[in-house]
Image (cartoon, rainbow, N blue to C red):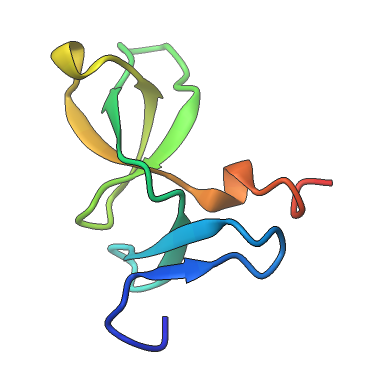
Length: 85
């Protein structure tokens, strides 16, 4: 991220992305659509890695906003069609 603008374009697929600084201090590309999530119960594996606006990466499942524990973004690494070929 070269400026204060959190938006950009993926150099692999050309999709609109947003940059979020993780708790580890790294910039992570995410899909700019915010989703709602809930962490699964003990012993159940989550389907997604979600990046919160505060930069925390959580393992959780997408849910409706009524049952959400929090809100965040899907990492663009998981959705980039050009990168995943």
